[in-house]
Amino acid sequence: MNKKKLLELAHTLRVIAEENDIFSFEQWHENGWLNCKFRYKHELKPPPDPYAALKEAHAAGKTIQCKHWSESHWFDLAEPQFTAAPSSYRIKPEPRKVPLGPDDVMPGCVISLDREHLAAVIATSAYSLSTLDTTRTWKRLMEDNLQINRSVPLTGKWDKDAWEPCYKLIEE
Image (tube, rainbow, N blue to C red):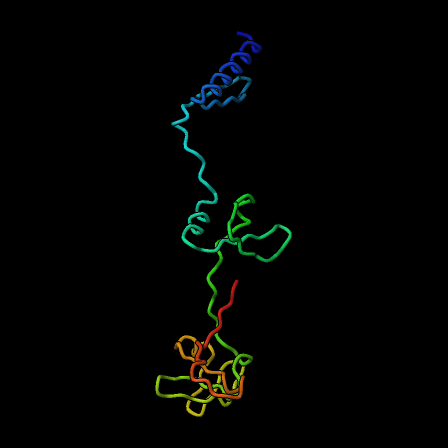
């Protein structure tokens, strides 16, 4: 058979495969030969969904974020459509705990060392804060799950319900 007839036959086979939606048809040239391969469609595995993990997270209630190619920040999506490249999406990271620092705590704040022992902050430095009883690093305050009440220096009044953790949450 000559090359023209082979190409016509390959085209005919491809048309049959596509019309009947039974076969997958591949055709390629290699070393001067025309190669054809048929496969039953039920034998073919669909390619993995590059958005599968994102879709699963969204279904579980996680927030999906998108980053436009021309911008540097991520923004939340209420109903992601997944039409951009997979690298344009991410699951919104959980906020990260970081220790408070000297800009967050001023003299007059109160630290709860335990339920019965409160200590007023008298001094702060880049690395720690000091009360009459103790000096602790910012990291140690966070690790020990201590609480702080900043109501007096912020409002001028004591608020017994203004306790908060000795850390701040940073969104990535």
